Image (cartoon, rainbow, N blue to C red):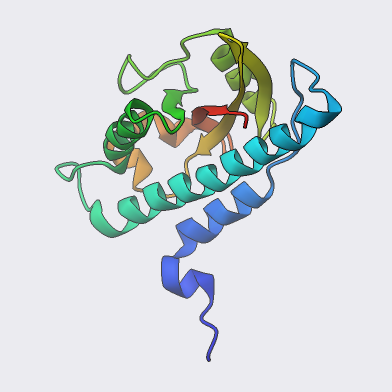
Length: 180
């Protein structure tokens, strides 16, 4: 079977995104898990990294294949609705938030101290920031990952992204995943 290069199948934007995702580093947790919890926390981190890869790849592919001009339904808006449906079903919480200070939609901003600190960490160059938290006695992994501009089409609706330095996050995905 002939191997087809990733770039030929998905285009340059997806390859750039894959390179960004593979550079995700280790994170620091706020709460130190016990040795029996450490494996569960690592599983949750692995899940977040996998979800992050799936979601970002889908957004890039949708933008690349279906967004031609400003009249088209943007992948970012589709993702906001997609993520709300996932969160509403109880699988995990996920949101897109702004990192520029000039959000396209004022609803998509950091809502709590974790999100605000996560954006600060991403702006210093971190590719992944997380912490373990407990809500009503249940452990969750809160994680945040950057969204950079990976293709020219992103600036079609977001002209302010044209001034962002290469690799700098314009947004982030913020997760709350149960630790099981």
